[in-house]
Image (tube, rainbow, N blue to C red):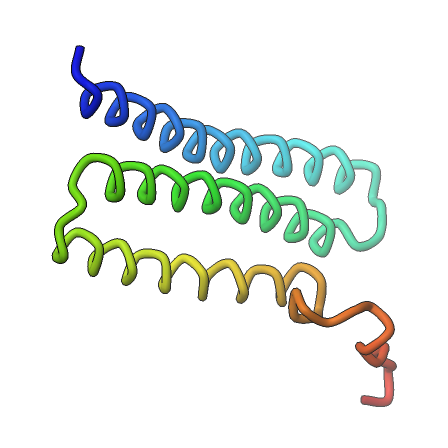
Length: 121
């Protein structure tokens, strides 16, 4: 087995882990949301979105890692690096958007910097 084949397998395993994290996270957060909804607990939707968003964020990190491993170790051409850069830009934008949706603040903001939203706003 060559080095490139080993790296390709490693990248595929990392990629599979990312997809599994997203799927399992979606399933788990759905089960938890259904159980909370059956008990008529408040803010089920908000908690569901938070849990689902966290699993998507973690899965995206694994997918980016797999792309980096595959591109840098297997096919380090100018074209593949440009494609990787585009993929990372898109996934970074998605991650930042999800982070803002989940926490209500940008990742670089502390909780103290964010003014609480009141009913009058």
